[in-house]
Image 1: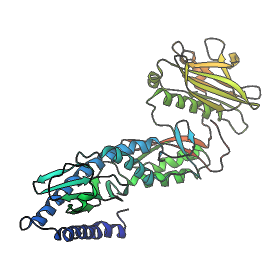
Image 2: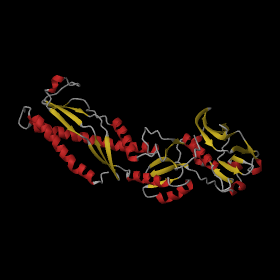
Image 3: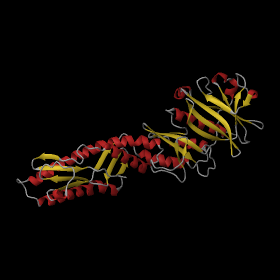
Length: 420
């Protein structure tokens, strides 16, 4: 971090000395070349120096854009870099004991990827003529930028210098032949040193990492929810739920997770009667034209529920939900426990029907997940409490400013593998 003493020495003492050494080296090189008029060498160095400042301003502008564009990609991928091989849970990358990202390192990778795409200077590898006696040939090859982050400050230093070749006349070649090397006056070389201020507070990175470390000490999602109340701050807002969906697949994953959570709901004796809501009326707009179909299947002797998001007859997403419960529907246009009947398949949502609520009913004789149309909900349904399962793998939404980090957490020593 810049806040360290060594970092301060680097940025405010060593770098200026390094820049002076470069200028001295260029002067030494040019000192061996004849001058057309007195002071020509020094004047040319000043021209190149001023030109290099324009390049630095250009790179700072590019860095502002790269910093802004890298952040949502980092958040979308749960803090992992693009090459992560960690597991995925309903569209969210999972933080586990053996697979935990470093947010700063991942952000640095996204930042550099953006810089490679953004930095396209029009003068790169072209001869630029200042006058009849002096021209330059900039080589603006992209290096890798190491980042130092402090609050809203970003500093970036490249591992590759920018080289500006200098010539005593105007050249119209793009490839310098060996014969031109002797005619070259010298090379002005410098490493970009970028400093910018951003709207995002990078201290959020360490807060997220330490917060999740604390959450992963919980035994289940209920304990995690209690810890999250203490983690909320001016910088970060935490929820043990997915971020608000913006696409049909994201809404499908939300529904699948709701079903999985209610499958895990039980009391101390393994029995349960509780109610759940799949979606809010507002979010149904995301599913216009789609249907969600559930089917009870047997896999290796274990009963599971296959969930599919279907559009125009094509399966867009498919998830397998673990659990022994059997699908069920009311046999009449009302909700009563006695008229719940087992079903092999259930269409939760289509153009004709919207079952936005369901009921977890488990006793010594039944083990059902019953899906109910809104029109069939009644006072009996509302009498039951909301399902509150104790699960050890769940998705979270962490809001930092205008950025939502989509992160899934798997608690240590968890044998649970609810969805694959």
